[in-house]
Length: 422
Image (tube, rainbow, N blue to C red; front, side):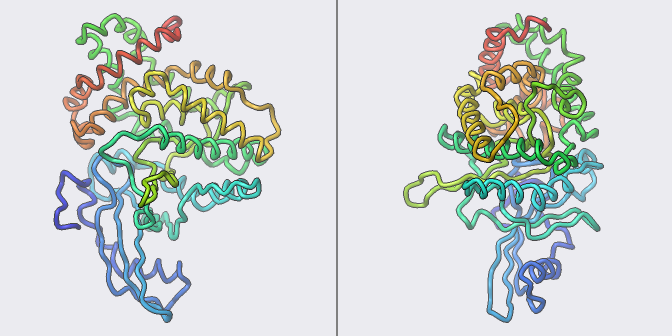
């Protein structure tokens, strides 16, 4: 761990590496990856891989291994990802999940095939960094080459720019387009990807999720300028979670002939993407999406609506990401044509109609995840406290930045008629 590391900088369970994460283990991984049985790890440095608030669904370490082979001495920076081992809320919430089996399938099967299809169509977009090791037994582990030495970094401490978001949505659109082609031509290929947030029962029963709408109604009641909206949300307080779940599982439980379905990322927010900018000019060069643990077949809105609340800046969110989502659609349409998608093409009007039809997903995200995300992003509260302490979670609703967001969002919903048929 770095000398200046403190409990406030890193997740507590990443401050000390588990005993099995040692030179012997990394030596085995590298000797197999490098196809060098004589490989010997001579030095191993281990530090936390992410800052507090970056993630919750795994434990991550950054390891730098120095090793020798018959060809000489080398250094390899790696990222190791595993499940929480310490007893407590985090381990309980993630128990019985399919997170690692889903992500392993994405890295070893799906993303290589998606890239192959793009390459065949003349598109060299890179969708993922290779996974050099994975296992589910005796413990769930994945190891990747570290992107930081390659010039990639997570954006912290500043707003993401419109240009950066444009490139993010370009990459997502290409992924979604290829997934639509595969779903049509090879339906069995993606059949196993059916575990999103809804399929994590411990998460969906957690107070962090189940109390969100009640906390939001209480917030509206105590905020005079917004109290006129309280009756709408009072009416759906007990049904919103189920209706949100219906949106997320629509592909599997209530398939709509006019619905747009894709393989979604499922957790499409800023901390799950790493950007590379030119060292000299600071010009954007690439973005790499990471964390594919809840990728699943679902409505296109699962990623797009999620991005409105968990990725975009407030001014973009207040217009429901109109410009960015329209840009996304133009790339989606272009890529579908490029890869030879044969069914009826989606339309921009149809996309926005589906977003409106799935408004309960908006309501859930706005009332449950947005206050927590903003408080963490503004460094007003800690993720650990928001998730586990009810009073802290309730406090997240009353910061000025959340109040301002909600004023614009509710006005927009009213303008679009979202409250007419509640």
